[in-house]
Image (cartoon, rainbow, N blue to C red; front, side, top):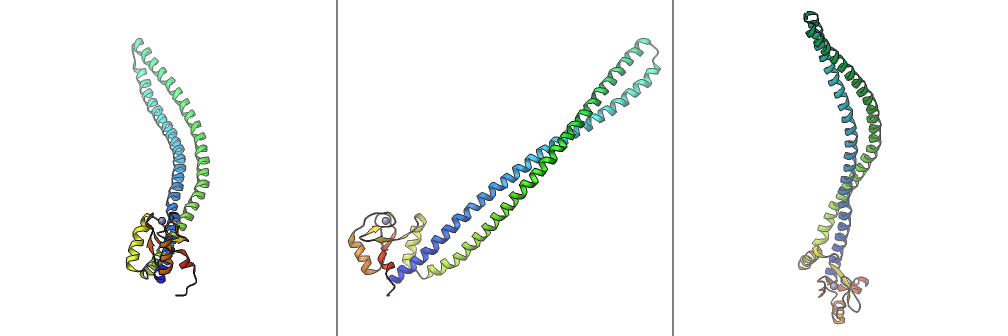
Length: 242
Ligand SMILES: [Zn+2]
């Protein structure tokens, strides 16, 4: 009977190890996701400044085009001006030309202002970009390190899968089935009873008779309170005579 117990205890040792590894491995994807989010946010911040610069340059180009079109229009008007015979029509057109030219002056001033703003914005983009490059370098390194750890943890888990299969193959079939059912709900599924019969899983005081029986049989039973598989702890603590 003691062999059965030892085999199950060995299996549980592997399961506990696997659970600990998986718990670690499960944290990595979350941490990686968090860092990737930070990286994306930093990139968005730089892109926003770059977009602002593009907007300013687009506005400036549009305005320059408007001025150029307006100048063509005025040039035509000036030609027409020379053909005017009536004084009234002449002065009306001359007035239009004057207004248009004033408008061009205002637009030209706006072009200069937009250019000035673009120069400032170009500097902002440059600074933000430098900042991003420094920040992203650190983040990318951290992400790579975590991914490496994740791969290692996954490799360790699959290596233990082999050990688990070996350990499980030595456990009594019916006992293994019971153990697997319990361990899905509570780990450890196999626990010792401390003399005179306290379950180490749930702390319930069980009968001394059950304890004594388990010492004599060197076998296992079930805790009536928590349903875990129990054995008398001293059986595993005793030197292996059988
Ligand atoms: Zn119990």
